[in-house]
Length: 258
Image 1 (cartoon, rainbow, N blue to C red):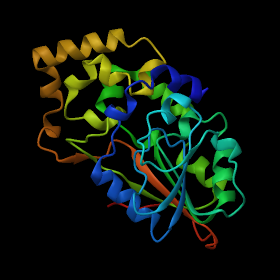
Image 2 (image 1 turned 180 degrees about the vertical axis):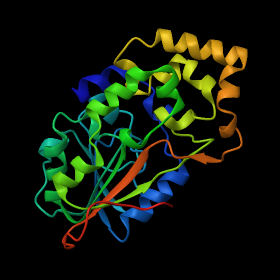
Image 3 (image 1 turned 60 degrees about the vertical axis):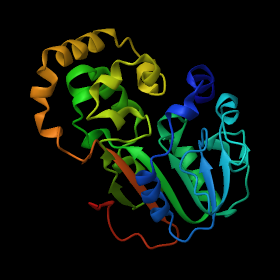
Image 4 (image 1 turned 90 degrees about the vertical axis):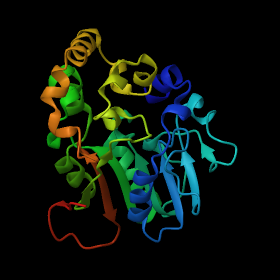
């Protein structure tokens, strides 16, 4: 269960999983003119717009305890059973959390129920990703992601057509999610950094870590990924998905490049 997982690994999470301002700007832009927002699976409060009326929902007591004193009010509850009336908010958002829900379809329907105008989801499209970390060192993560991450097609089947925008990860991203260190590979060798990446809690990563460390020492990683060394940002597979409530269904999900 996500609450149990983050009760176990959540210590210090707020310090390692800080909102990156460039990603935050993209999220705020996608929220549009929504003034009242429900943040589902809110964790320690990253990416909650400070200039909007935000209500947070989070199942883990350990995560709620790390929310800043001036953060939005937070209710301990799950995505699948939101304790709010229908249409209570202009928008409902969920950031890198849907893969932890016991029933993501039920969670999305709940977000749709409480949102008057739009639903916003930052997620990971495993089908679009060719990330060196999972491809070359931790294929177990790729297998797991394909099991727990909803495909874009499945999302469309659940709530209808949407717009999906690639979220490019800056090379110096300050948020410590799995894809944040694509140009800083040595960070994945740090057990403290890995503690805030839930993927590493699901399998024994020792073999991949040994191979990565060896490749960094020998220069093999640098030679294999030389094309990344001058990149400012990279499409690792993260997608910002937005449903506009009440708009007529006209087509399949649209993928828009930034």
